[in-house]
Length: 184
Image (tube, rainbow, N blue to C red; front, side, top):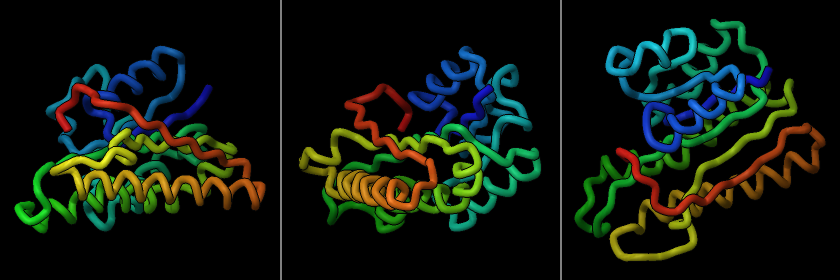
């Protein structure tokens, strides 16, 4: 049985992936910022759902501690799906929104990959980064969002090369979906 951890799993693509993997018999662990009381209790339980805001500096260690408290020592698949998408001309964006974009879309996947690397290595896992076609498509009002996704792509490509060179067995994949109907 495979163990899968999905961030941004409370709606949209993340929830669809969680449902799909669970239907296939995987143990699905989910991370999201919504309170568990606001979620479907038949699907989200304290044993499979970690409520944490990935924009916070202590998010990655909190997720690692949550897994450790449940005896999860290995992950077969880590899907970095959480993302936010403030849109607007750079000069009109709030600095806090710019920081949140960088923290959630770029810093959180890097920090979480780092914190969970022992779990990934134990299972010779696959680490999937959900990026965006926007990473390669410049457009007005998307400068910061696009920059976070392009930087995420650069990180994933370089980390993949490092992992191949060191023979850890961990693989990296980047997926670039187009527009997805989601609350993001």
